[in-house]
Image (cartoon, rainbow, N blue to C red; front, side):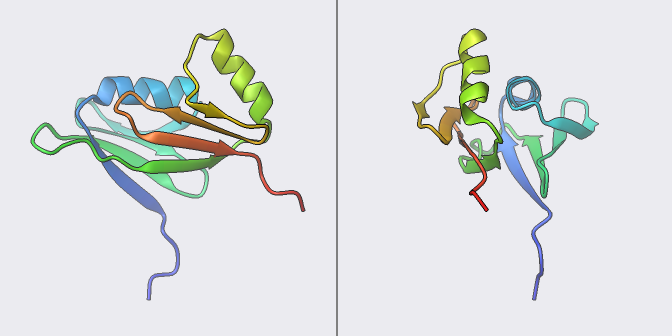
Length: 110
């Protein structure tokens, strides 16, 4: 039986735009890149790989991240003119360049 999921691969038709979003907006570090084919980000506990595939539709998924300070994160996005889909005190929803929903939530209080 599998113990832990260590990564996910999503298909994209806009590799350059997707790379820019995850690197500049979400500030994820690129761990591996095959120019024009794929890019992998360190998502904390999981690796997120985007592969460019023109014959398949983009993979639509919702990605969830922990953000220590959601209000500060939202303030930074607004200053950059980046659209926010939904915003609450401890959670925010964005969309990436292909419409995937990105949810950032503050960690639960211990």
